[in-house]
Image 1 (spheres, rainbow, N blue to C red):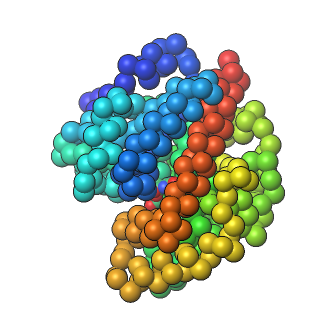
Image 2 (spheres, rainbow, N blue to C red; image 1 turned 135 degrees about the vertical axis):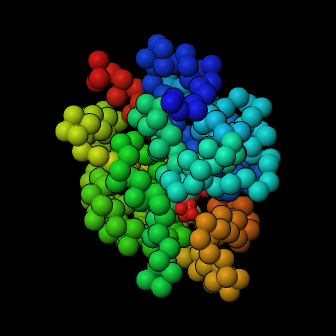
Image 3 (cartoon, rainbow, N blue to C red; image 1 turned 120 degrees about the horizontal axis):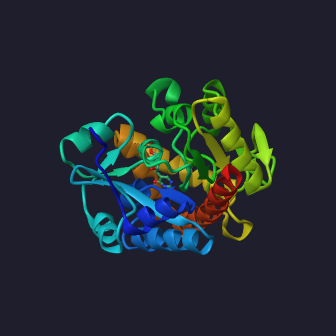
Length: 305
Ligand code: PSU
């Protein structure tokens, strides 16, 4: 039985001509940003990938089909829809089998990208170990996915709402290469600095592509996390954000927000508490990641020969 994959005309064309493709996720659209900035950002991210010389493939599940590349109209419908399922490794197959619709998180997008033979994926920030995980056990499935699925994920680090130290520890345990791009420090999503060194540093797309291909040749399962710091002009300092994040987390606890709802709740509260500045930064960092992902995708095509 073949997989229920539908390639958009643009992606199908890129596949047949061997052009570089960058996968993009859809949970950031349905759960990560408010309307209409969510669709505006998704369109700008696709344009950025094109301008940087690759082809964008935004992934989502629609009516039991895994869409590899969405039309502008479908993207708009998805961005506007309410109560869309947020799919991860655990529920992606069940949703497809039931003919359902849902957006893909980092974990689900990695699985889908691999099924569609796409090597590189750009997002904002991966999920990770939530603060207080020693009590709640709340750890994103994104980390396990990075350990299993051979896709290079470009993100601005892990979201600063998380416990970044524990997130790095788990990534180390799982053997996931965490590569900071162009700096020694692991970036903290809205800020360039987390106070923690990244385990690895690579300064070129060429080097990142080379490491990706070497892992494949060696048969090492799993992907790479490329931690690309937000541009300086767009960052919000960690000191400024700390009390805002603490307040949002306090409210989430008081309201009993749990599991998949935690990250969307925190992002939306931080948006309100910073009067929209966190969203402006989030958009800037996603565009920055899209550019780097397009360069890496091109390098992979070049080096594969
Ligand atoms: N990047 C963003 N905003 C987001 C996400 C990434 O800038 O909303 C999404 C991704 O889909 C990621 C998810 O997989 O947040 C993490 O959710 P959780 O912590 O529930 O695993």
